[in-house]
Structures are given as C-alpha cells and as structure tokens.
Length: 264
Image (tube, rainbow, N blue to C red; front, top):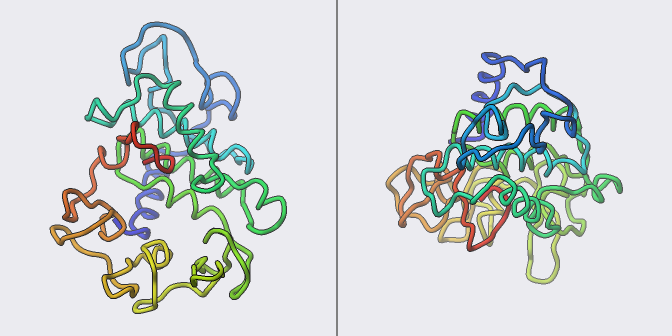
C-alpha cells in the first residue's frame, strides 16, 4: 500500500466519519490511556465496564511533542486487542501492551518521540499535524485497516539538518533526505532517487523504494515476488520469503518475545 494511498484513505475516513465533538482532551477521563471503568472484560472486548477497546470518535486535538507515544500507543494497543487474530501475538491485557509499547516508542535509538531534537530545532514538529495524523490512524485502527504506524508518525516531523552535515537518524535531515552511513561518518544526503547507491532499505524508504541486490534504490516488489523483508514489498508485507497483501494481523499483531521498534 503506497504512502499516497494511505493519505487518501485517511482523508476519506475523516470526511466520512467526522472528527467527533465529545472526546475528552488527552489525559482527561475517557481520553486515550485512561481506564473509564472497571470489570473483568475479556481480552480485546468493548464493554460498558471497560471501554478501552471501544471504537471512538477522534477530534484533531494538538499533541505536544512529548506526548506522541502516549497518544499513538493507546490507539495501537486498542487495535492489537481488537484486530489481531494470532493469540500468541496479542498482549495479555491492555496495560501490559501500553507499558511495553511505550518503552519501545520512547527508545532514543529506535523510537518515534524526539522532544529534545524538537526543542533544539534539529527537527520541526507541528502539534496540529500530529493531532490530525492521530485522528486518522486511530480511526483506521478501530476499523482494522492495515497501516504502518511508525512510517506515518515519522511523516509528522520535518528535519532541518542540511545535506553534508552530520546526523544520527534520517528524521533529522531536511527535504526528505537520508542519514547515510558512508563507512566513516553519518551524513545527511539528498532525497533518494531510483538507482542511487544504498546500504539498506532505510536509505531508499523516503522515496518509497527498496535497496536492491545491486545496492541501488529501485522499485519495490509486487505481490508474489520473492523478498527478504517487509520494505522490499510494495505492500510492505514480506511473509515466508514472498510479498503478500497486507492484512490486519500484519499491522496489529506484535512480536512480543522478540522486541523491536514500537508498533511491530
């Protein structure tokens, strides 16, 4: 599923469903991450006693840079309980999911929250854009629509590090550039283009490309073509060595015993 298709789908859902007017602000009773009741609800069930797994309506409330993980983890954990059909990849309860996913999301090396980089001006962050993205992804999660949360969250940020300057991660680089490992230093280079040199799929991802066997950015593979990892495929879903159509399980099931980035 291409990034452009993701955006169109998000816009369609927001137009169809509306932003909602009765959702409390983040941190208030009834808001994401807050238990609205008590009881012995089953895993992933929406009940009158425990509404954490219930579909909601989402206003586009601005989200501060240090609350990105709090917001998106809540939405993802609800979808993990609702949408994943593999019981071995569903957390035993909502709170366990939130604790584990927050730890992953706030990890400085593989996470998706960068308040220090925002405050120092290394990257720009728009609270309103974050709120709109949250409303889109949370709605899609309630509907079990396949989506890559991490990719969409990174779209909120705008790097300010110019080409040729040192970097630690691609989110820091301006104009959709890439933090490229030349073997000696990490440096921002320009936005990737087809047939540009690469060392891994991250070098080509901003352009929706993959790093081919020839170490060049190239088109992603279609369904049924052989692959090595998810980013090799146009659907971003590689299973058993072949590209498959993305499914809710692909998006919302989690490798609990083999922790990686948040939302995976």
